[in-house]
Amino acid sequence: MARLLLIAVVGVLVWLLYKGLTKSLRAEDQSPPPPAAPEDMVACSRCGVNLPKSEARLVNGVYECANSADCANRS
Ligand SMILES: [Zn+2]
Image 1 (cartoon, rainbow, N blue to C red):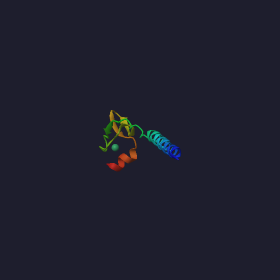
Image 2: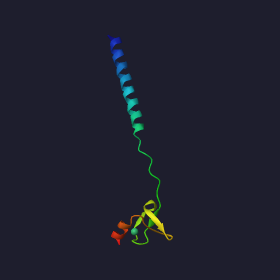
Image 3: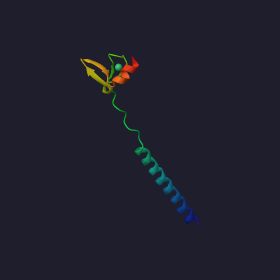
Image 4: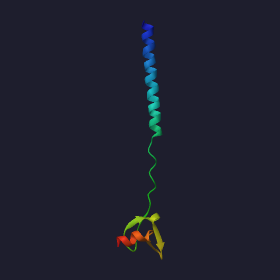
């Protein structure tokens, strides 16, 4: 009887250990993605809005909104 109880206890311990390991492995997989690199901000010379450099265009040495329609609506 004592041997049966020992086997049951060892079985439960092994199951808990396995469950804990798989849970910690899953937690490592769901790590958040690295943050995006910061981007330079520039001010539009026409409307004055600050916007990311990728959304601006360089015209005659000054930055303007790449989307002219948005720029016209802001000013
Ligand atoms: Zn603008």
